[in-house]
Length: 141
Image 1: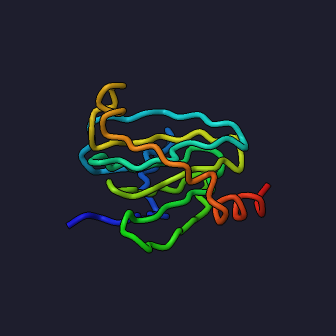
Image 2: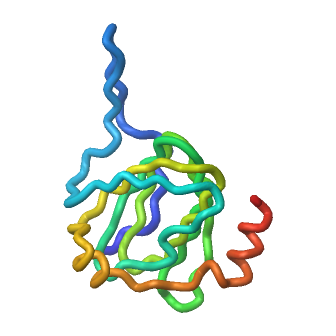
């Protein structure tokens, strides 16, 4: 059964001692991890994946994240993701990230992220051209 978008506000347990702390961000299998830096006002994603799924962990900044299942008539959803938030997107799910602040995050993917593998799994969209998406983004500018 395909998993849906999942917002995971709390990450794992924090282990503290006199040296500092360890924070378990993710305890799942993945094939790659990418560090992503995005400037305020930029757009990323704007696509869906045929097979890839990924977790994203926000290190710094804020993302206005849009997502929608691929089924006809599915509702467009959005949520603001902030520092410390962890969220999951699955395959066959449209998604777009609009950066409300300059943002630094990690993306843990279920599949290899070579250019060839990534491009073969990706279907580009024009969510940023949709009236509803444009209207929501304009509220946050």
